[in-house]
Length: 152
Image (tube, rainbow, N blue to C red):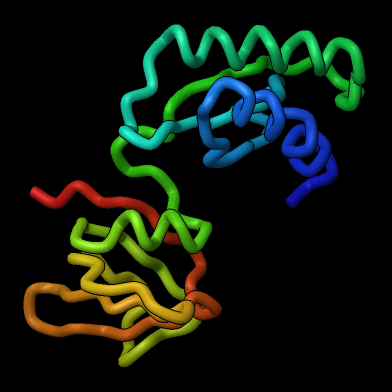
């Protein structure tokens, strides 16, 4: 986590909790010559709308103007994480059980670093992912990235 995302996490967590939402992720990155601060929010139903994004954006913008933790100009974007939301926290994995996921690992497991299939279970930091022909058990420490997946 970068210094900026750490500070923004501290600033925004009370804001999203106050309005009954969840902070999913924060991204601060340069694209071309512009910096972007992207905040991803969600709720229990997964139905974030434009009003939720506007409300969080306005409250966060006020707080960022007050504290001014980012020395360069940037664009603030607040949105839902989308259908292929990242999975990072224990509760993310627990909620994803029974759904399709896309996992990449830091090191190969049985010769592969990419796994896509149904998350059959999540217990004690271990994921069981069932692909079409094989089932894998992957520990959370082995994961590089994890997200929901739409499989056609």
